[in-house]
Length: 93
Image (cartoon, helix red, strand yellow):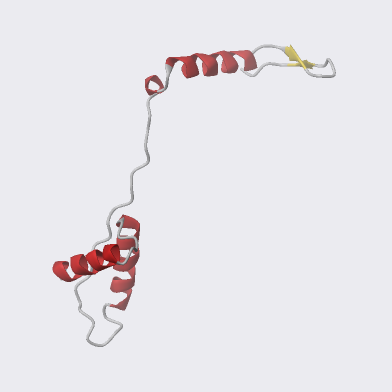
């Protein structure tokens, strides 16, 4: 069964169509939905490729200048300041 899927994916690439994990998930879902529903359809179910994990970047992974600017901005939010009309705006704590 694996060879059939791989040959189909190679055909998609040759035809200029996507053959990435997103397509493989769609194909596996469609295949599995037909298993047991269509007479003569193979009972073997296909595994869906896992979704990509969210990327996490540590604070230290950002450039020093950006970290310094963000720290300065957040620090400024804690101070009392004035609005355009002159009203006092309390800082966030």
